[in-house]
Amino acid sequence: MGSDFPVEDSLFDSLLPEYYQKVSSIHWTPIQANRQLAEFFSNCDENSKFLDIGSGCGKLCIILLLLTKMNIYGIEQRREFFKIAEKIETINDLQNVHFIRGNRLDLDWSGYDIYYLHNLFRAHIASFGDMRIDGRIDFDQKYYVQYTAQVYRQLCWAKPDKKLITFHGYGGSIPGNWRLTQSRIIGYSNFSMWENSE
Ligand SMILES: C[S@@+](CC[C@H](N)C(=O)[O-])C[C@H]1O[C@@H](n2cnc3c(N)ncnc32)[C@H](O)[C@@H]1O
Image 1 (tube, rainbow, N blue to C red):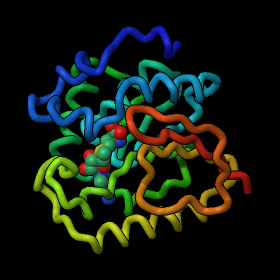
Image 2: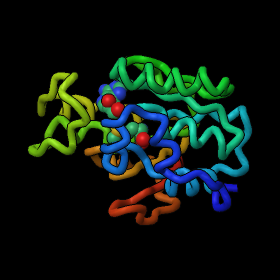
Image 3: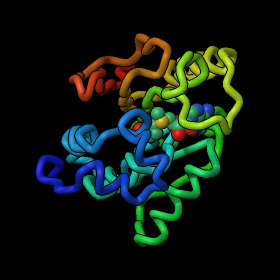
Image 4: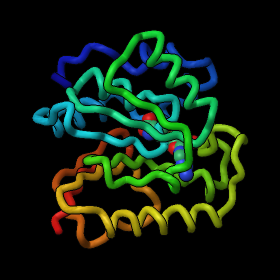
């Protein structure tokens, strides 16, 4: 289904406030990557729970909902992004997409089957403005160290059969219990799928 999905990035982005349209190519996953996800998970039904960890304005979650049968969840720390995502969900009466407002540190990942990580901590070590969507959170290298270490631990403890997608990585390494099953370049970075093989 993914390959013949007619929606382009500019069409989805037009639903967002103007500033977030402008930063879309840097901060939101392009629809090309969603098409890839739809191929990876074409056999999954609503019993599969996909979790976008740092879901921004909900672009990835909503496009993936249209392309697959999975239940899609997004957790986002910024209230404004969470509200934009919820608004698009409500106006379009979308089912099977669920937005959670919060810090990923506080969420138990064990109830989800597929984890998606898109370079969400880089802003804490970025030396240039483009990598920071806005100034609404407290940026500090200590958060980068803390968050990447916690993701690493969560991946170490993950139960077997979980899947992980990384886009631009997450800032740390992938523990040895995960096996790389597919990888390709999308845009200018690696889009990779991993399976917990233990
Ligand atoms: C690069 S954007 C990716 C957005 C979306 N996942 C996508 O791929 O289109 C990273 C998002 O992660 C969010 N984020 C960063 N750290 C977070 C944390 N600790 N808890 C929840 N969200 C976080 C940011 O606010 C931002 O919206």
